[in-house]
Figure 1 (cartoon, one colour):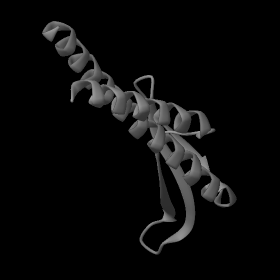
Figure 2 (cartoon, helix red, strand yellow):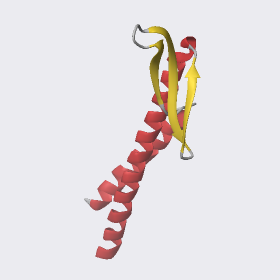
Figure 3 (tube, helix red, strand yellow):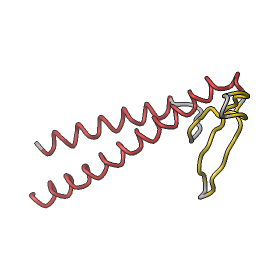
Length: 104
């Protein structure tokens, strides 16, 4: 069972690496629509907010760049998800490998 699980983990890690290599450009943060006059919802603009190197940052995004920015943010979320899964699998792999070596 343990050797089989180790093989499953190794295969999944390889698929994760392949997916990461295909991601392309990315941006962290959240994109929100703001209004210059919030009460009457006039003068809309888009704002990208994120934290990098322990500093909060804000970028203003032109309306014609919103779709691309959403794609880049999606890539970043996918990157974070895949790397978190990779770390979890690596921890499990390490524990199983130590158990297997101990039981020999």
